[in-house]
Length: 200
Image 1 (spheres, helix red, strand yellow):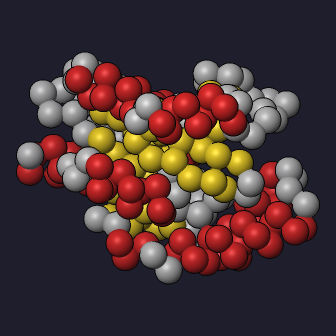
Image 2 (cartoon, rainbow, N blue to C red):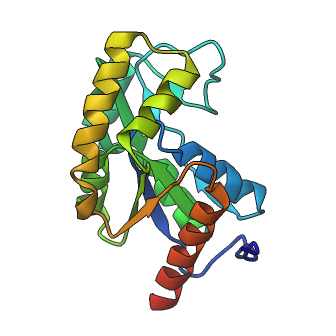
Image 3 (cartoon, rainbow, N blue to C red):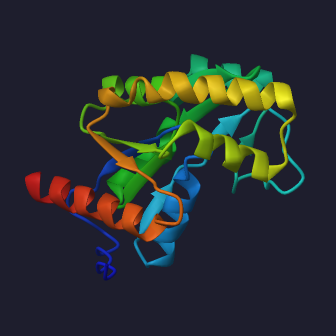
């Protein structure tokens, strides 16, 4: 399928888009390909209290904060949503989202199913898209290929993936990201967002 042209960088009605789906479903790959095609958008950098991995950079992959700093963000209303995952806290900075939308830029947030529900409650105009694998077996293959998790963590991730898949019907849109079909997945996402833009 031919690549669709990218939208302009500043839009009269920018979209807040939440991408959810199991770990390993390809959410980052979708956003990377969208950027590669020249689409202008802001990818929200999440706050977390977990320590950085060797390849991760502060302010680019995550904002790495202390428990005290994270608690202060909650108390001040600085997080659009937050959750504890595998013993670490994660949160979406509210100011980051509002500033970029105010500048006319589409904003993409990667979060889990519960986080997507919380954002919908806070900002009803959000477009929620669930990126699904073709099967749980595919998710397991991708997680194992990363080589970063022990067996216990892999099994926890798979259990979480099953529970998240069961809630995919809560989303406005579901896209199945078939193995080797990233272009088709991104084309479908662009079609959805173009339709949302026209509708608004």
